[in-house]
Amino acid sequence: MSMSGDYISAHAAAERWQDAAGSIVARLGQLDGSHRLGFVFVTEAYAQDLDEIEVFLRQTTGVANWVGAAGMGVCGHCTEYFEEPAMSVLVLPLAEDAFRLFSDVTAGVGDIISDNLAWLQAADPPLAITHADPGNAQIQALVEDLSDQANAYLVGGISSGESGAVQMAGKPTSGGLSGVFLSPHAVPVAVGLTQGCSPIGPAHKVTRAEGNVLIELDDQPALEVFRGDIGEVLSQDLRRVSGYIFAALAVTGSDTGDYLVRNLIGVDRDAGLVAIGDVVSTGDQVIFCRRDQVTATDDLRRMLDRLKQRAGGGIKAGLYYSCVARGPNQFGPDSREMKIIADELGDFPIAGLFANGEINHNRLYGYTGVLTLFL
Image (cartoon, rainbow, N blue to C red; front, side, top):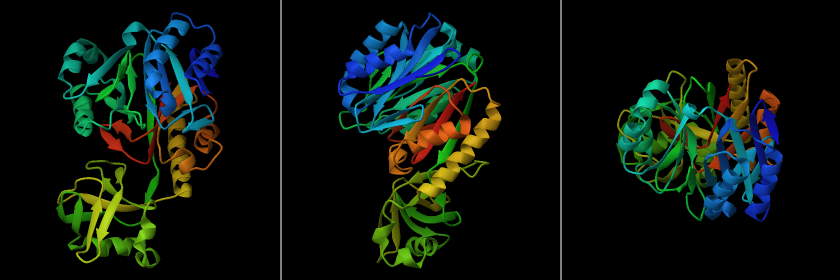
């Protein structure tokens, strides 16, 4: 258990969700009526029981509103649970008017906006803790529309798991977006994003493309430019780039050099083509990146240092969304990613999810970590 003021987190692993939840409730201790919002994250083993978990937590803790999602892994203070039955919880002491839940955003955001219009105008600009279903092909558009129409800054993740993309926002839900709006007037926050991949060359202008296939970069065959960036050794055996080299799309208008990492799908040696995991257009900027533990660790520490300066030592709690390809798959065993956060920022209540994709501001990311600090 970790606590700071009235913000409290706890996590546990057990074969049965009842045992994990019971352990968490015991660690949370006696909560008072001010604890009105809780976050709950579960691994795949508990995904289909999230409705029963919500009822149990609500009845045993007295916390009336629960938001969360299922994923391949969850995290808590200095601890990561990956592909094992586990649960992580964070409860917040908030006034009733400090937040609004939303769910079932599957085809458009109009109903959510109209239902909460007066509150959103008073809270402007709200933070939206958002969970998304990867099975909905309109997720990127829904994320953009929610950010735009609610004038909200979104943070969160894409739920994952073989048994379905299960979410929770007062009730079990799936198929779109769900989560909670938080008023910045009641809940001050600081948000940071860390990349898991670093550029290996300059940004290249897409001069010819079709769908997700790069044909020309900087008026040169795309594969020729790609080979030039990755170097002679990797160029001799392109099979070695799988899982190590990625393509990134530069974020238009970003003043921080932000980019969206996407997978390499394949190459056509004869035609000189490179296929990536996103649609590209003429004029886009593409950067080739590498993924390794050293660069990811360095960037994580840089992000944490910036957040520490913004927080000024007043961290009450945190939510962390990290990619399923991070955690033990990038930083190694022994919960190293979460321990780096504690090393840099100290001890505070935190809960989080290893997601199938991360949400920051108005975009979907990959191979990143998104940390929200409550101040």
